[in-house]
Length: 264
Image (cartoon, rainbow, N blue to C red; front, side):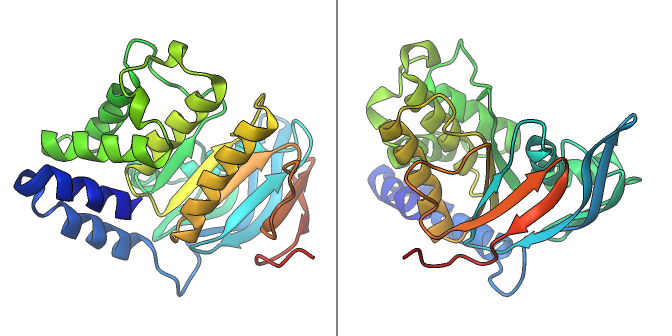
């Protein structure tokens, strides 16, 4: 993503002087290969009498792509919401980079956590009255009210290039296929250069070709140093490509294959 941003900067010229340095500085602060960027320790999350996540502990390092799998209602989406800061744990702690969230943590800490995590939601949450470019521009402006207009639009165009939608910048979500909508949602998340990206069933209801395209995009982000966690009830039809698998059953962690491995 950063490399494509720099190509856009070169085309835009002096109006974007300094953006490359800011992007590099952001990445150097958020991606630290020496340690985990996500760490769950003894995490429980209850909703009334229902325990959705039950004593789960695991960590994720920069550059890892982790498939979080398990049946419906297993707790996968709840775990992603805990990592994204949409929920607080009932017990235990969730550390995202340098931010630690516990049961009594306040809203300010949750907002700080969310700024470090990009998210691709199951329903995508695209704005129907904005075109593809405007959807990304709006998300960037919400994240950084003071960013220069030229920088915001350049980053938005770069995001569309990365996901292969540069030619559809003026298309509205309803004019895009399901696969293209998923790619737009990924572009909106990645333009902020997050250290972490979580994706909730990003290939749901897609055919094999579109699903492979989406997974290749996520794999490319991991190769650039982003920690990527993908929740899905089933493993990809084409296999995990050697990436780590964490399985959840009835809120409990039942399998963790550990660091990425080579498939035979």
